[in-house]
Image 1 (spheres, helix red, strand yellow):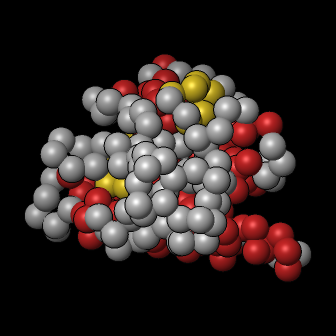
Image 2 (cartoon, rainbow, N blue to C red; image 1 turned 180 degrees about the vertical axis):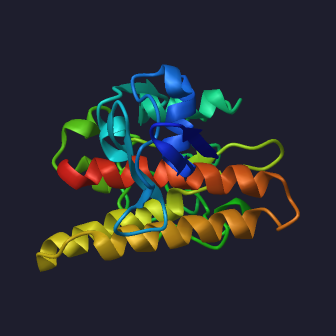
Length: 237
Ligand SMILES: [Ca+2]
């Protein structure tokens, strides 16, 4: 949307800053009026910063400082939960496709069962057979680098939609492995974060046809989940 005042002029607000600004009450919130242009993330076409009359909004910091809630075996940033609720979307709990320990598809590389990620809701972005998933084990969050073994850290693993969810655990598993490999090489996570965005986008466009109204919701929350996951890893791993 375009917001105009006589003193601050005309500024566009969109994507995550718009969702957060709307959630908090627009110009009546502490943010006041937009006074700057939307700024994209370094690693993906997601708007993550904007100047307002009440201060500089950094989306990553908003996710970081919003607190978190345990939902099933997930720890999810409260801002993600609030944004989902704001859009009438029920917060997903445990992976609907969670495998049982008797599942013949269980991979020997993983401490916990891994589901069959060739199913359509994964949108061709499968969980690598070498992924070591830990979230079935009590207390795993206290282990070093637990965030590399939990699919989407700080975020739900699915975009929930009537009839068919979009499953991002394959994309997040690949992102976890990419970051771990980058650590070994002493590199940053920029390429991994970019890959995560592209793969989450592939999930949305593969699971929902172009004419499907659910695709718009999926791409909106693709950005939300991407910012929650990559923001977590900016300072916490
Ligand atoms: Ca993770």
